[in-house]
Amino acid sequence: MSTQTKIARIVSPSRSANILSEETVATAIETLAGLGIQCDFAKHYIHQSDTLAQLITDKAQDLNEAYADPNVALILTTIGGHNANRILDHLNWEMISTQPKP
Image (cartoon, rainbow, N blue to C red; front, side, top):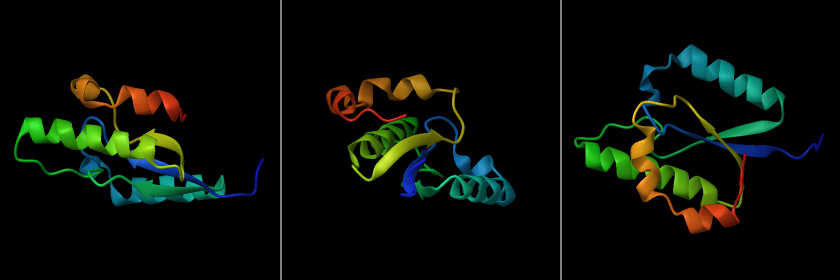
C-alpha cells in the first residue's frame, strides 16, 4: 500500500450529516486516518436549506466538486438513499466520466 496520504471527500447526498453524533464522526475520521486517508468535508456535508430545490442543487454541487477536484482520491457518503435520486439530473455526467473515483 502506498504511504502517500489519500484524500476522501465526505458528502451527504441524502440526509444531512447533522444526525450523526460527534463521536461517530470522530471515530470514522480516526479509522480512515489509520488507513492513510485524510477526510475532507463537502461544503454542504451538514446542510441547512430553506427549500428542497436548493437542497438538491447543493447536494449535486458537492458531488460535482468532489469529482472535479484532482486532489480527491475517493468519495464517501455519510447517509444515502432517501431522495438521493433527485440530484441525478444535476450531476455533470460528462465530467464525472472523465474523473472516475471509488
